[in-house]
Picture: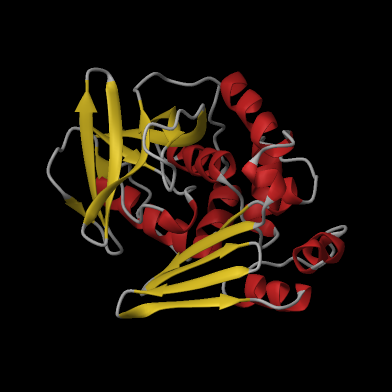
Length: 275
C-alpha cells in the first residue's frame, strides 16, 4: 500500500508540527487547513541528496525527519507524508506523477519525476501538492475547473488535452507552465525508482545544488545555492548573494526554520560555492 496510516499519537505530532488542529473530518475545509499550514511550517529542502545522504520514504523515517527533527524534504517526502495523514483521516488519496516544465525552455521533455496527490472529497477530485519548493500551492485545486483558481499567493489554471493535464501559474502577467500529469495512479515502486534517480544521479539537480523554499502568510523564501530571494506579497522581491557557509546556514535556520546541526560535511559542501 502506497500510503501508511498514522496512529493517533503520530497524527498529533504532525498537527503540532504544522500548528493546525482541524476537526479531523474528511472534508474540504480540513484538506484546505492542512494544506496551507503544511507548506508554511515544513520547508522544501534537498539537503540529504545534496550531501549524499539517503532519502528514505517509509513512514517512520518521514516522521522522524520532517515532524520530529525540524527538517523538510522534497516532493516524495512531503506528499507521501501528506498522503499518510490524509489517508489516516479517511480521505481517498492517489499518488500521481508529473513532468516538470517550470523555468525550463518550451518543449523541454522531462521524465515524470515529480509527485503530487489526487484527493477526492465529496465526489470531486482535487490536486494537492506540498512539495514544489517556493511555488507550492497553498490550497488544493479542483481538477476539472478550467477557470482561474485563486490562492493566497498566486493564481493557477489547469488545462486538459486528452488524458493530459497541465498546471499553469500566473507570473508577471503571463501564464507559465508548472508541470503536466495524467490521472494514472503511481505505485510505491514507481516513487522508489524516481526518488533513487533524483537523489543519486550525478546529473540530478538535487545532487548538484542546494535548494530550499518555504511559504509564509505574506510571501515566500527561496534559496538556490548561495542565492537567496525573499518574495513579499506587498513589496518588491529582495535578492541577496550570501557570502559564506555561515551566512547560508543562518538563512536556512532563520528563513526556512531548519535545524542543520550535525549534518555531515555540510560546511565542506557549502564551501564549494565560494572556491
